Length: 271
Image (cartoon, rainbow, N blue to C red):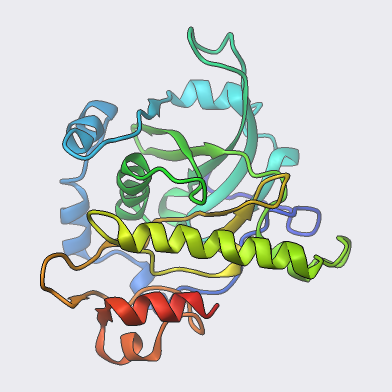
């Protein structure tokens, strides 16, 4: 799984090549990061123990062997795209995979081990946030795999891929304005839900490549690896390590590393 030869051209699921705001030297984990990562959950039981107090959505802990079946042994012609985390494969959960499961098309995002710019923490952030949040405009996390060194996320399959690819594709027809407005409204509702939740969430990576579309062009926010808990009570901001994608983050955030909650909302809403 180390080197994924993602077929970019034919895929409408292609992930943007826009780099995160970390510099290349930050891509190599420090010794402290490695020590901290060793304390993170390393099996499904530890993941579920961590989720116990906040988990609102039941998630399926898949084995890696089950994922091989779901993806046809990670067939290259099933690659939907790739990014900093690794490759994304189209898969199918069949009813005979495990008792009680219904047939379902899924997208399987595989952590690319040492070749990945994102790591265990980002994988865990997605499990935690999408495991406790549920909204029509957030992509649904079906389950995960946490087995040995494998870190995998299994989502609902979004048939029309990302907004980015629909906007800039050379083969797809241009989106009519009514559809674009529907997409923008759906994405805004997803952000509003995150910001107005009982425990607010700062998304931190709002861009067209992270907005996915189903067959009816319903927009759903995806990729919560950089998400962070927002301020609560009388706090107006949180301090963070600068993360996100150049050109999309608020300049006030880039300069100060402080996320002012009202700025976060208005800035995200402008893209």
